[in-house]
Length: 115
Length: 112
Image 1: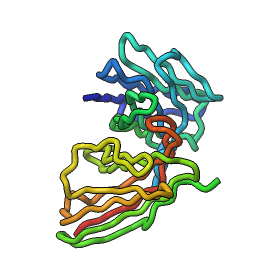
Image 2: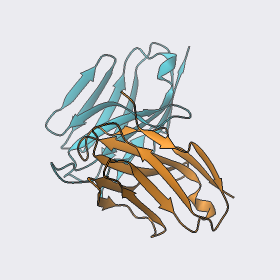
Image 3: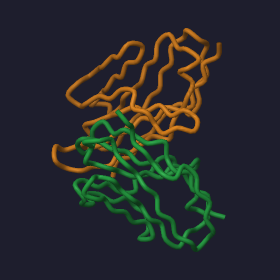
């Protein structure tokens, strides 16, 4: 089955710097890669996702890149702010239309943005 | 619109007891998934329901079960609780399976 590795497990940056979190996946059939942000006491919140037919996607300060050949994808946060501090999870799945596949999550990255 | 609602938020149970957790998905979402989150194992898939049918199940013992009702609301049940079942149980809903899941805030289960 699918296995997702996420690095680093912790990341500390200064406010205004960029943060990059990387994930690798094992199943070449995976075609949907969401990223979630989890704040203390809350459930994971979807912040951006990418499908395998796209190499990059941006949403304001957040971007995700996907390299299908190398089977890795990354989250890029620019101009970080203290409110970006949270645990970030990547996930992968083979999401067939009309089918059903579970999300396989990485272990998470605790991002701390220092003012 | 209202998000995914999970009840109760916190629960303390004794070993050997059983527990039922509830999830109300976003209106119009027919797919509901359940995940267990622990510090050691991270987020692990339990099961997924779509239109009252279980479509996928994770690698958990048979003590873990679930169901979905005609209004898409879902419940999961854990019988014969063990200490290791202590975790945050998260429910997520989507309009279609596999895409854009929205998570609830979870139910924190503590087994003593």
